[in-house]
Length: 242
Image (cartoon, rainbow, N blue to C red):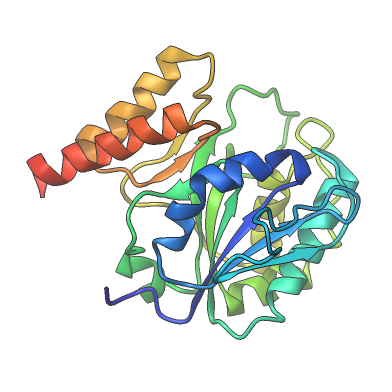
């Protein structure tokens, strides 16, 4: 397989996500890039095989376990700084419930490498005060960054105050991108960031986008049931539309 030049796959999670990462690991490794799992110091994800090693996967820890708020944002900042300790020029970054279904990451990500790529999802369900200046979106995982983009984002990473309505990484990244002048774009074959467990309607929407529209960047995938369905949908798309 050609492509995915100088790219590292990184996965963000905490100890409770280890089973999800285990289930999705073949779809992180299928990019044929080195893989690093980042987790908090107080809830580390450790290698789960018998000898304590997994081929082509490294494990790093930093920051505190926290879902939203200042500690969550500071942990993400720490992990992004740690990413720059690796030699690769590009980083495909996933939360533990997101992935790309195709082994080959799209060439446009590398051609437009000054852009922060993500699943851009509507923010219109939240009420915002008059004069709110940010776009009404959130930058959901997965994300694709060049090394240059990460450096620009980190120059501004301590400036934004966590939004009181949505004090989450998805909005903090948007704040940093706007302050740093980094363009941000949605993945070109459609955004998929839906609840999939115990929500058959949205799971069906996700499945349909993969099966009929060729979407490959998906979030959320929290079980093998969901993963297996989306893999089948991807195979259907490749058989009938490519």
